Length: 247
Image (cartoon, rainbow, N blue to C red; front, side, top):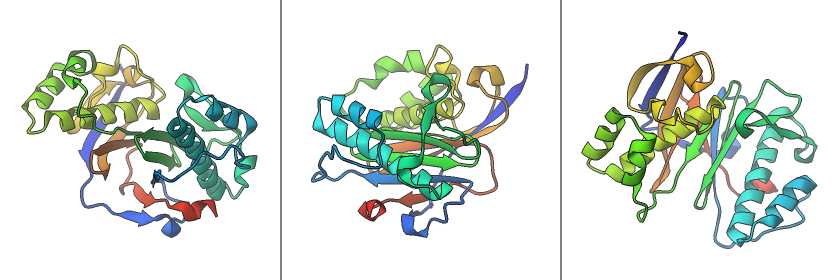
């Protein structure tokens, strides 16, 4: 058996930097963007490919059209800055379990997640995964515990001061890890380690060899998130995007 080691941790005291401070050369960078209530759907975004606009228009709800189109727009603009290319010239493809990839480029890795009115984009020089979840006060998360978590994880959630937050904290860690490794959600999801600390696990279970760090962080109140990446000396760098990105 080939073991990998998963290190789960909570990031505290980190800063959200303005995106204008980004050198577009970080080993791992996480970008956040908040969709405003007055943002309208634009069916003529020149940076997007026709198939992307077509997919956006197939969404029935206006907020879903806005969320999808701006996620793709932000991804294109950020990757364009990393690669020094025009956003419209970049071609994306999907790998194993629909993991997004940049066609013809293996030096830059991407992942996206969105929930509520927040969009996250993670970009790294090695494989990355990111997940954000809006805490849903009406969801009966207890019904999902046995199907998604180990016995130890279930005990952790139930014993927590805020079991609902603990559920989302562990869930985002698992999601970020399986997205980084292209494992996808399957029967092994409960076996993805998500408690604080270092955990040995069979590499076959996570779909990729080597070690990983999974770090929890807060995007804003009621929006826990996690990013998975190869171990490195420094933490990822976090940036806040604003509308000037589109100018």
